[in-house]
Image (cartoon, rainbow, N blue to C red):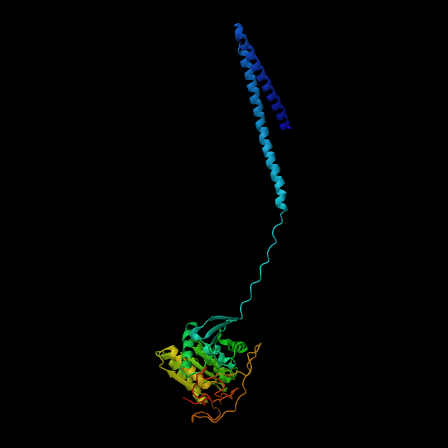
Length: 378
């Protein structure tokens, strides 16, 4: 309503300005026409009419400014209100469903130390395959297995030592299994037997431990029947031996130069096992860990079955290793051994080892490839 009143007032003021301006102009022309007759000019009327016309014009302009401002605001509001529905009408893009993360791989390759292949299984167990494992000539060959309880910083010397002994022709090629803990040997061996070409027989399975892992490896070998054919403890401190009537596998105890406590612990354990007819060998004085691991590889080659034709390929499901049936003891080889205890007779290998079982080009021969040496006390 206020805008209508302003509009009417503006129109009237504009019309008055035009009318007064016209009359001021006519009065000016009328006064000018009297000059020819020498009549006096009166400019007061012209000035008054012109001033009134100007005042009317200013009034009209003053009324027009608010009307123009309100009209622009109305047009802006109208444009905003007209554009708002268009924005609301556009539907938002549909939410994208995130894709599920891919499952972790069951086997992941960590590297190729010493020319072999180091894999890691899903539960954390590491498996080192020797260089000969990937040879085309080894397509149907099963490899003996060694469970190794070693610290991560000892891994390079372990792989280098086993490869060095194989290159010298003094040791077989072994698949090394490094479980995450001391109590996971059985599950790790079952998973490795399912995925890789290995010989699952106890006569082709050994265990070693280094430093803090040596007591674990020796305990697993002495307390478990039918799982390991040989064991080795390196630089370990062993607790007193618990009485047991179980047959024990061949055992190697080693200490590096300067390891007085580890050497004394090895001798105490040997003295505790010898009266029962168990074979225990002690070595020391080897300067480097790589050479020491090479000697361990040669010892395991002497006691375990070597690479041979696999009976069956890796099975799709894990198969637990059944304990071996006890073997009747023989007469002890040591005169000081009791008559009731004797060294464990060697198991008959599941696969006979003949010169054609493993190509000589892919697997260097070791000492006594056709048979293992009988257990002896040292």
